[in-house]
Image 1 (cartoon, rainbow, N blue to C red):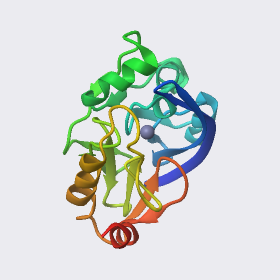
Image 2 (image 1 turned 180 degrees about the vertical axis):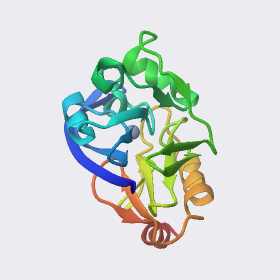
Image 3 (image 1 turned 30 degrees about the vertical axis):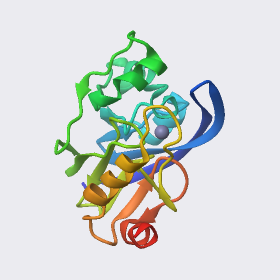
Length: 207
Ligand SMILES: [Zn+2]
């Protein structure tokens, strides 16, 4: 069975530093016909499970813990796999943001770390720690599929936002240059919001 990438868009809000914004988030699901990994858990469990279908969810992987990316992770954990559940994976450096979204009530299950390899549907997602947009932000590189899931670290048109608490522009650009620009030019970038791009196009733009 060949692994593939499935996608949907989910609408809701993002809140931080006392402000709230309407946002559309990408939902990415990687796997084959049998099992899959869900990347990010934005506004609606139903939107996510519609992409999952009847497949087994082996992990809910969060690119970072801004509330628009992790809000329904605990609910999805409960409902996935017919109620038998699925683990939430998050880099522990995002605990301050997780606590803003969920308090201490629903901790995640497994810590992500740089270099960790996640296997699903006969393919591999390599965890790349890319702090900057958030301290525990990660990207997930799928070499077999020729793509990388960047959350809010890298968008079509450049690096993610760094204007709010727990973000740092210099750290973000350093992460992108050191950790993402080494990937092949034609690597498709699946972002947390908006359109796809490629590593080559964004490297040329940022310089
Ligand atoms: Zn974010």
